[in-house]
Amino acid sequence: MSDTDSFINEVTEEVRRDRLYGLMKRYGWIAILGVVLLVGGAAWIEYTKARDMAAAQAKGDAVLAALEEDDPAARATALAQVEGQGPASAVVDLLEAATQLENDEAVTATQTLQALALNGDVPQVYRDLASFKAAVIGGELDMATRRQTLENLASPGQPFSLLAQEQLALMDLADGDSDAAVAKLTALIEDAGATRGLRDRAQTLMVALGAPLPDTIQSE
Image 1: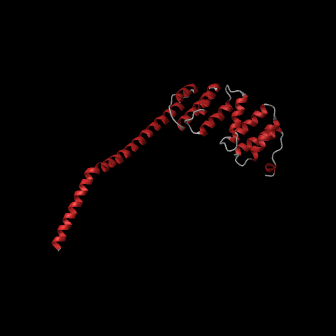
Image 2: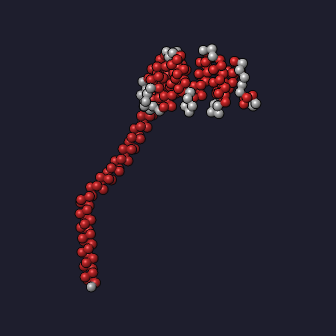
Image 3: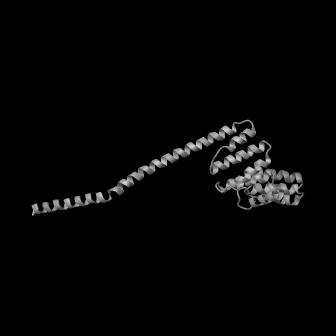
């Protein structure tokens, strides 16, 4: 019985081995392909990381080189030649607009900011910042357009809401509507999200206008 059992085991093992070899011949290429894809994918990820890092460094070097230009016009020209995407592009555009404004090119700076505000490839916060700066600078924008832009940005929950309200108060004063300006300044002072600097500016302006400060300020 032992010889018979041994023979049966050997035959069974041989059958298993033949089946295994058959499966390897039939499906082994799948395992090989999986290994190739795994190794190739890892290599591609490392390559793209290195490529993106090199591109980011090159853009950063270009921006730094442009900012080293003493002449604002030359600096703006150099910044305009820096290519970028997403947040990097937005930062370059903001720097370019600031340089144009420094060179007394308010209209050109406003145009740069408006183009950024309409760029759907950059995050919304940069677009809102560009809109805010364009409305503050003015350039070729009329007062109605500037006010409408600021009112949109002053909506509750917007990142530049309080700063937009401050600018609207200043516009009210320029229009001779001191009551509206005081109302906005009072709301700013009482807003828990207002920074110390913003509150100080609002209080100083209200004192200059001879308007009473909110009770919460007077009791401090």
